[in-house]
Length: 340
Image 1 (spheres, helix red, strand yellow):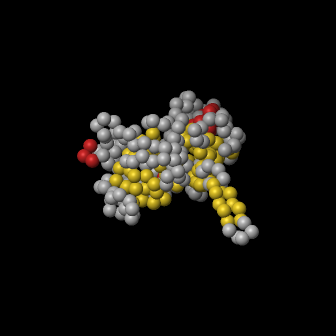
Image 2: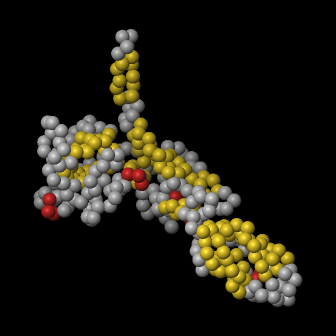
Image 3: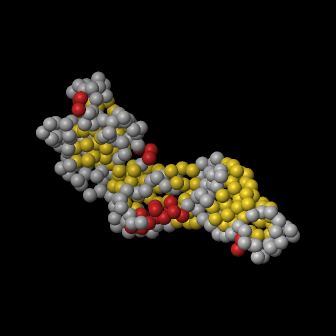
């Protein structure tokens, strides 16, 4: 399946790092094909999922020793409880894996599993705010400081251990970006506020701002029309700006201060109901104008507070991964904002 989106996959299932994985088999029973028969050769047979046995669900990693007695009856001893099994899953051992002329498959049924856990999306995302500062200290001891370069966010992403199918969706997406060549969008899970009850999750800009400013006047609802139903902004949330007049404004910002209705500072205009003044970092990268359509209900500059997507690119041209003896993949990489 080809990639159809420019957003890094963030909803894949990762297997827990706990000692017991989700769905590890706790108890199992022989369901059919295990009774005595003269057509099986006695001996011990080694079985493993994804190899010489089939499972009815998505369980992986199960391993067992199958002992065939002299009379052809069967007993089983689990050597690896596996992961991602569910009660009532069946495990089928094809008769061709057992020496002899018997044509009856052996079927096992999972009776119970251990809970463990899996997680969706990233295991960890560490975010770094980078603002190079140039310093010069004079002989008098006075220090002069100025910004030496532009601000950018950098994130390091790691996943829990992944099954092959989940890993492939992420890895092939990254390969399609051709190392550091092509940018893509990435959602940060720790900066997604609780969903508001409305259908639109953006806030609108109320007043014009020029590059370099550090506060924005925003509206979270459009009066009775409810053209906006944004979450209440919170300190620490990241947001992006959607400017219909300037598609190159892709910078991500963090909220470092919030003032709601009645909380304005000295010298600031009154803050109306459903409005707010937010202080941001870094300073605004581009000029923005809060133009609206003729009815005044659709702002052309919108602040994405619900699921901001950072425009990023990989920091290295190489993408490394590892796979362990259980067939689980591990992957981590770093990205940096890639501005237009």
